[in-house]
Length: 427
Ligand SMILES: *Cc1c(COP(=O)(O)O)cnc(C)c1O
Image (spheres, rainbow, N blue to C red):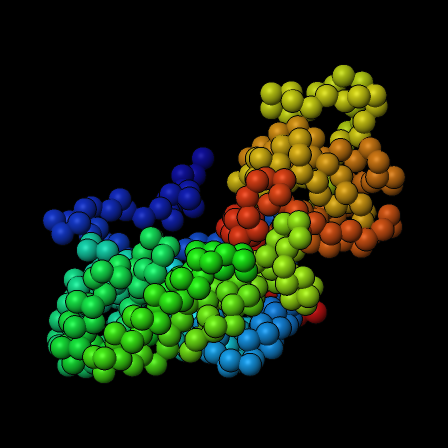
């Protein structure tokens, strides 16, 4: 027998173990970790997310029309892999469609967009560049605009700007009532003094984030906007006039015209999901204009007929009452189909809803298809989105899933995991 000289492929691919250095970095480590996602070409399972790029452009136009009276720049928020839609393709599409700039949460996300060839301004909103990873240096190297909120950050940026003999721009984040990230109102004057005396840095943007913008009746937004405008006045007294002031997420962009300052930062609405939801949600007309960009589908891979009393799945939590037909789909909680949908959620088969039978497992889920005549292995199963079938036409929205699971649509779409390949469509 002949011995193979090369190791098995999985071992050949494995990198050497990383060795931690005195400064906390790892030898041989890429400077910033690149996310890995399943590629369509690698797809074996029929489980995938179809992303409709025309819907994305449509939503950008709908949003642009909604805020048109105030003409803010649109800084699309593409954090968390563009809310699970795949940031590089989404950014390229929106860039070509004329969006003004992008915002992301992480430095890594900004670098990924630059690697994808994006040339628009990119704001790194998370404001955390880490003492270990020299993140502020990386941000400047990749032409990403940092968000800063404390003296240390401003001093560090000023020092880097001096080294590079060029002026470096940043946005200052102010905490006007979210108590999460940003300079507190008590500290902001000292920060502005420092900025005013540091010619190496340019305060190009002033930003804050609103806590209750999805509730038009809440008084919190007016209070936050009031604080923000006082900070703008303080800046002006020091001859600091940022080119961009921005506070509005999708909800504020729609519900609070006074929050449309120089720019707005919509995320969820770009992907076709209204930030207003639940019974009696306001701005129904706006919601109706949006088109969800993501559709998640798979196919039935197994079908079985169960007798009265037969049980399904881990823990045997579901039992057949009479004769039932149960189908198996190759999608589970590791793909983003929440385990909280166990015995609760539904999917679409042949244009009709079929409920989840038993617990959702990691890779597989069972569904009760007893009421779906003509069901077969290979039938399409829609987990999120619309389906036209011989039994009718039906839809499951991110809001439906959020209600079943007890969460919000944002979490539903960002949970579709990297194991599910994204297929981009231009219908
Ligand atoms: C996520 C985020 C947004 C966008 O919010 P949506 O509700 O998805 O429109 C805007 N600004 C900041 C700071 C964010 O973190």
